[in-house]
Amino acid sequence: MTVLPNALFVSEPVINESYTNDYILHVITIPFKREDNWREAQKAFLESANRHCQPYLEDVRKHMKQISDEQGLDVPSVEPRVTIQVPAAGEIHLIIRIPVKSEQRGYIEQSILSDVFSTKDFTAQKDEKTNKNELN
Image 1: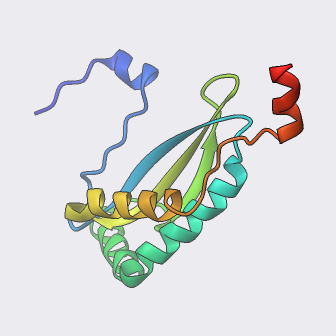
Image 2: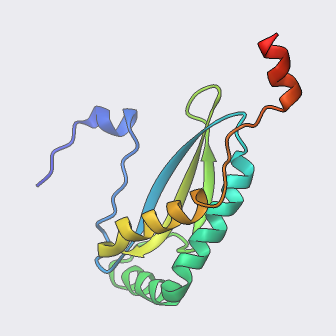
């Protein structure tokens, strides 16, 4: 049994990943500054998530359909997605939701993060002229 204070549901996001046994919808939150190139990051994360989830996506669809039929639940789409949240002024969070085998969530998460961040830098780049003016 798990006991959670009611206030927790109001103040913090709560995600139940346990209603499916074999596959889950795993959520990864990536924070960015508003001036960073988060739009490009959003595209890169979606491409990587699709690539990493493709081998078992059809199995996940079948599994979620079976759960829906057995338990009468409306299960969300299992397609990988990247949405945005604005938790505070000047911040953008990319919310990556991917279907994964429950025992592979850490591995797939790290694979996607490594895939994207090893090849791209999304931080805001100031041009050299701006940097020179700041130094003078």
